[in-house]
Image (cartoon, rainbow, N blue to C red):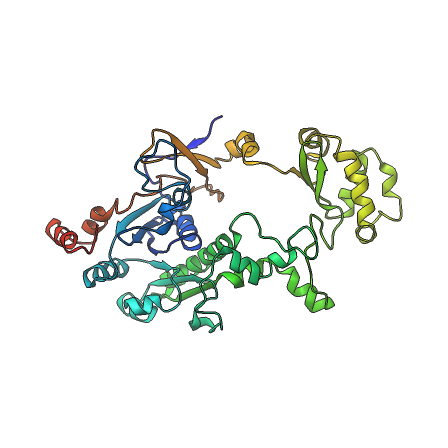
Length: 413
């Protein structure tokens, strides 16, 4: 199977010329800054002397004796440069301030108050660099935008999924809420923070004035679950988990196949007509119980039974031959099936990168935003801890003696 390979040099992406100081860790912050890096921004990841905690998270290649980082870190820190700085030292803080003075964006996802205690609060940094855009992503937002009663609570993906309403409408039945598989409680806020940062940078380039961009993970999950707000507001109904069905559309969800599951999404009556013909039952089109979406919603169980009588005796591949291109359809893929599907190969969504410490190359997900004139891409693997410390500091104006003194003092690694 062929896959794309990370290139040696960073191409001139759409964000070339933008410098980002990345003070993030775990998933939400690094995912945000990685998107910027994928599209050409120079992202300098500031790590403590022991590194981002996710460096210790696997999985690792079997032959990796170095173990500087594993799959988790590799997947959300590509295209970045790393410097290792002790923020508990005055010299280390001076290094970070000097880098921020030369930057367009700084991003952090510490708990509320941490940057203030370090002397790196937004109010201080904007005095240092008036055009700076400062981005923060936290579980419940920053008090500057509205002081949540939970502002001091630590939060991760499962917390924002729970409190943002997502788990409350996900699960096999009304009594069983369920976590969404991927960390969307982190990655969706990361995407929204990207939008805010880029809008603010555009504004700063017009006016010379930066601004504070605040994203709460819980807010973003709620925004993504928009239907629970209008359903409750319009009808007074509190939505609950619906299993693999949709409360407002039918058929719309998952259906058993002989070798797994497949999704079918009939969003309007035209697709219902196509589906009825595809399963060899055109008489369903004129049946009053199924002729409209509203009627089908009222007879959901019967619709499901009719469709599964057809799908459950056929493989996913056979169903693709039957439904593909006619109605919205997709087999429920395992990762192995994703690796084998030509779509992801031609779309450059499986990318080979070097794994330090291993003789094997590894695969990570590619860049989903395709730009015609200034394409983004995976240009370099995730950085080793402090791999670019000297390079970044020399470019910032430090000479070799100054860097050596900083290292001897323990301020950098």
